[in-house]
Length: 213
Image (cartoon, rainbow, N blue to C red; front, top):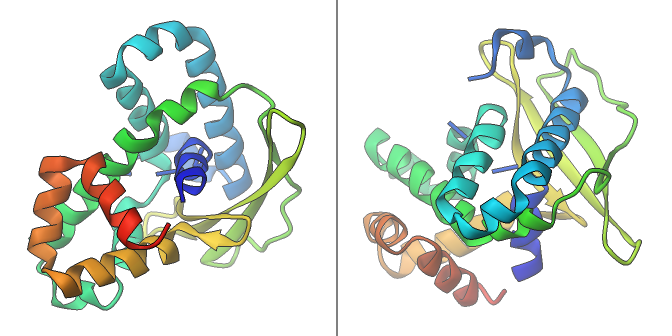
């Protein structure tokens, strides 16, 4: 789970709350390539400074990832059946707290990100569909590759936004849904949200351990 989480954020390239007007015309594969390039440019130019300034690192991540990742939709999928009983305020709080916890927990993994880490594979989907998958390969330091797929959906405004990351066949949505469901059953949604808001990455780490990761 530790490696899963690190790659999930570092390669989300995705983890949330408006694209420039021109970006609405970007195909899903172009979105992934843009994020990969933006990450390489931003991290490469400020690596040493970002190592010393965690909040600036988080800000850089937010500015690159949030416009392209549908965290509201993703959080509903993570909540699963629990989303039906949740109020709009609870769903909004959960989405923000969950993303912030992930960002703070795995942000430092991005400091090792360099251009060429991600290869976007040829796109074979149909852009007329409302959902599609962009497949990529992540090149590790030892030369091995990891399959990382991004699930996209077309929003009501016509933008393509990612909502799930599948690493070596493991969906981050499914992975966290199981853990969140167990936690809510053991306590409550409000309790989980409060812990994520007040404890952040520590609450997420505890959640992962309980999930057997």
